[in-house]
Image (cartoon, rainbow, N blue to C red; front, side):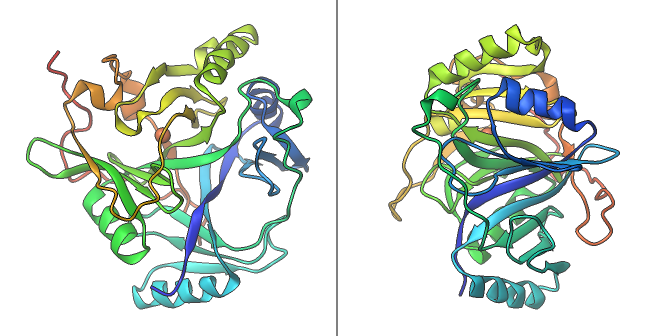
Length: 327
Ligand SMILES: [Fe+2]
């Protein structure tokens, strides 16, 4: 391949009430508001030196407009276009100036039907890592990953690993040995992109990196103090898979956000993937606690990159939608 994808870099979430969303993301979770317009709020974490990693966009219904990847250089976008053309995939250019604070981008409906975009340029912003006076709420540092429900995890794995150059850090197989979930990365952590077997295509969650596990505990306290206890869906806990300390939240529109800390370096090309059995209770929560049904059943709709309509959902090829615990 003659292009280089750097990392997952932003997500565009459609939300129904910008003020409610701002109260949750800025006042409670401590995201930095880079800019607000009539229809958009641009948010970033404390260590991020670019304009935003999360856009909240006013809309009639909650949905996901795009998952954004940063590429190394502008020429990579043309190379990606040629590649997607050769595969006959639906795509469109958005020229510089079309999207605020962003250079030109290439959008594609990926192999699973997810709206994915690639760009190389975004406006810079001040890195606030050492502005400790501004650190609030969960002290969000940066976007870490997205996790999506897809109907055919093996197909998504093959496309992202063999065609786009991702590496696999960990995976999960079901009783028959078929791939149920996979954790893939371009940057040198456990993942930029995870895929799980489920009704799809949907965005399951966006993960943001926090400075330490105590920041997650403090986030719970702040959320509860502000009346957001019901927004805590799962955790805090530790994943067996990825070793991350985690907390899952549902925002005012039901989009799922993960606060995340504690994974590990995956830079060496000879790093071997870790394989998990779907029904190993330590896989999803190392301490053994079950995830609630909502965590397996609910996720955000994604949009068609051309029509802007919700992408039609399909049933997954693997029947099992959630693990069965032996203990
Ligand atoms: Fe995650």
